Structure formats: C-alpha cells, structure tokens
Image 1 (cartoon, helix red, strand yellow):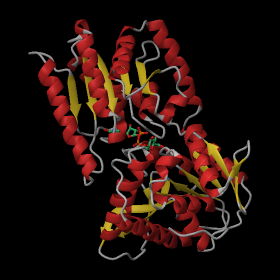
Image 2 (image 1 turned 60 degrees about the vertical axis):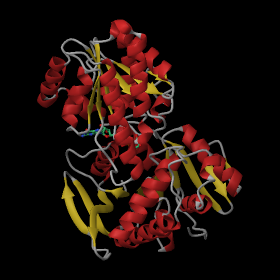
Image 3 (image 1 turned 90 degrees about the vertical axis):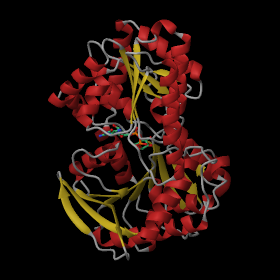
Image 4 (image 1 turned 180 degrees about the horizontal axis):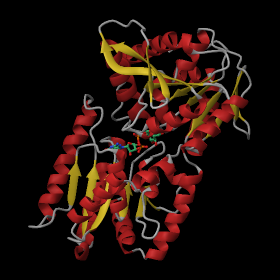
Length: 464
Ligand code: GDG
C-alpha cells in the first residue's frame, strides 16, 4: 500500500479534535501510514518554512507557521470571506478583493514549497478542500509527478454564481493539475462538470473521465462518512451515559429536540429557530411538552458575517423565549459552547428529534452522528435539510426545505408523533447506510481510485 501524504489547511490529529474532517483523515492516515501536512494555526513574524514534525495518536504530522499577512489574506480573507460564502451560494456575503486572491496564491506556493521534501516517489498525495485549490498545480510546477488527488468538502456552486468570482476560470483551471477530484454528491460533481464544459470546453464520459485539451483526469462522487463504530461506542461510554442522564433529567419529561452546528450562516440556524417558533404557535397543545437544545460553538469569530449571525441568533432566541416562555419552561436552550464528542453522543441519544437544517452543506456529519448514537430499541427521528449533501444518502429521514418555517413545523409535528415501529424502520435503514458507507469506506474508495489513475502529464496553466 502506498504511503499517504494528506495536505490540508489545518492539521488536527488526536483526541477531542473538533470537526468531522479531522476524525476522517486521522483514520485514513492510521491505515496507510504517511504524513499529514498543513498550517499549525500559529502566526510567525516572518515565514521561514520550518516544519514541526510530531507523532500524535499514531499519526505523523508536519506543520508550518504562517505570517500575519498570509493569515489575513489567505485564511480570513480568500478562504473564509470569499470562497466559503460563494460556494455556499451566498454571493451577498462574498468579498472580492485582489489582495485576498494574491495572499491565497502566495500561501499555496509556500505550502507547496514546504511540503515538497516530504513527498517520496510512490506516495499518494491527497489535498483537501477549498483552502488548497491551486496546491496541486504548484506541486506540479515544482516537478512532483506523483498521483495527486483533491477532495472538496463543500458544495460546488452553480456556474452562474461561480462566474461572479474574478478568478473563477483560473481557479477551476488550476484543478486540472489533479489526477482525481472527489465531491460528496453527484449534484456537486455535475455542477463542476457544467462549469468545465461551458467555460473550459471540457467533456466528461460516463465513467467520470474529464478531458480538457491535453488533460485527462477523473471525477468521482464519494460521500464522506463517520467512524460509525467509534461513535456508537462513544454513545455507550460512561461519559455519554452521564450526559444522557443529565440532559434527560433537565428536560423533566419533555421531548428534547437537538441541533448541533458550528455557528455558521450556512447551517440555517435562524430559519430553524423560526420554524420551531412556528411549531409552537401552530401546536399550542405541544407547547411546554418540547424543548429545543441548540449547541452552537462559535467559529471564525474575526469575520464580520459570523459576528452578525451570532448577534442575530442571540436576539432571535431571546425574542422567542421572551414571547413563549413560562415560569418553569423556556422553549429554546441556546448554548454557545463546544462539548467533547462523548458528551455530544449522550446529548444526541437523549434527544427524540435531531434537527439538521443547513441551507447548503457539502455533506453534514451531524446527521450521521445523530443516527449512530440512537438506541436501536427506541430511536429518535432525524429531520434533515434537502440541501445537505447527506440528503442524497439519507432518504429515510424526514426531508425538509429549511427555508420553509411551515415544512420545519410540519416535520416536527410528525417526528414527535411518529409511532415506534416507524421510527425503528426508518432508523434501521439510515443506520445501515451510516455503517456501510463509513469513513474508512470513503477514504478507501478515494485512495483506491487515486491509485488506479494513470500517471499525469502536466500541462501549462494560467496562474491565479
Ligand atoms: C465541513 C463541511 C462536511 C460540532 N459541535 C461540536 C462538535 N461538532 C462537530 C460535529 C461534527 C462536526 O463538528 C461538524 O461537521 P459537519 O459535517 O456538520 O460540518 P462542517 O464543520 O461545516 O464540515 C460539511 C464536512 O466538512 C466533512 O466533509 O460534512 O458539509 O461543511 O463532527 O460533531 N464537536 C465537538 N464539540 C462540539 O460542541 N467535539
């Protein structure tokens, strides 16, 4: 088996790591051996390219510090203020600044230069996500002939939206340096194919081989999963049981509805609160019988749009609680704090409804974790946005349009009244999928496909 070099913006091997991506990649690296390379998260006054090697929980990591200007322009700027909103269909929030694009190019050149000595001839190189679109091309420019794959963890936006980005064409062309590009769903793959065929004259055959001029590379839909076994074990752990009891007792017999999301405008939290409020208004008999527990650890707090969503949500939760609460009941418990994964598993298991309603999401791992944590004899009901990538694999959830307060309200009513047999039937089908297409399935499918790609021939491409 070839060694694997994983390259991603952040490297977070080791226990307690937040984020589905971290868990997924550590598992793949433990299986293959190799190195996980990326930014340390630290700032340095001047970029030196010094690599810090560590061994954490069976994974070798290599990290590099970035200087302040790179962090501002590449990470806070192009990644978080330009690409993230645009790729989640929010051109109203996307900021287009040449300095961001320059910083993004510079940081990617620096990553390529620094990672170069770590790559040995037979290694598979696997680049992750939108922070690193041009990295493959930068490695090729430095003579790397290895198989290089790229996986996009977020949606690929429709062609007409992407066209608003000044660097859209050059950025897409830079992706042609890879041998394999993976997306979570067919929808994101087709959206990429649509751009490439209309703007770059590419053609795609039935097996996903894309040809643009001299370049030939493969596109696959390869949905990421969770470590289902690990998560089910977490749900049975002492800490999870303790948390389960704490949460159940605090609900005093009420039905608990849970949401767990990074505090991000793509996750549809305002729309979720409004849908829940609608439910309270339309079903007065259910009032005081339900509580929504929303866990939302803050993220990207230096970006204005994240500060705004935080303050909007605080206002909204306060207004809904003010309007509906009684002496002994508040409708929404809104918690701006993160918990350990075993505690989260306990919270999921204590909740009769998992409310996962992003407006747009590459995949969404919370939906899968919620399913994996349930009691097989008495499982809860998953309500899932049609616009999460996970909806393609999870049709047995109650699928909703997250923009419609009425659909969220109807689904809540249905979930709360759902008979046990139907809950078990739906959960079994969902759990089979979560177990079969788990994170090891995902990484094996991607790395096998990468191994099968022919050695690349590198064309010349315009630089962004
Ligand atoms: C990106 C894509 C895609 C949340 N709160 C806590 C906590 N979390 C963990 C969850 C879950 C992860 O964060 C969130 O994963 P998602 O998949 O829901 O979303 P993103 O962070 O936006 O991830 C997404 C993913 O990449 C993988 O490809 O699915 O579409 O946007 O694992 O459990 N973890 C802990 N405490 C918390 O309070 N420990």
